[in-house]
Length: 119
Image 1 (spheres, one colour):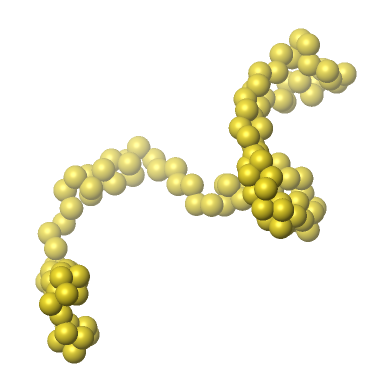
Image 2 (spheres, rainbow, N blue to C red):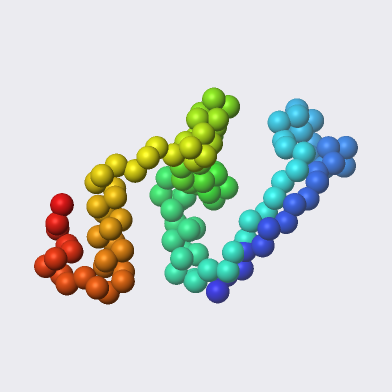
């Protein structure tokens, strides 16, 4: 298995081994390294995937992470979401029937013909 570790290190621009001083202005002040224990086959796939797209591994991982569906809500959306969790709507009749069928199924007192597909 391959190993992935996470480490954070600080880069000191004064002592960084770069000859182009303008490049230092665009570099982050901290970086992190990502490593993981994975099967060799998966490691080969991970190496090959960014090559297909003509990207670096770093760019590929960052892009995949961003595309994974991380949601950033505005303050008003966060408040509406919290309010929906704190004060959910009352269950409808259909939801009540669904939970009753589920309870029968889980309790074992349900015969297939009497519990499933009855609406």
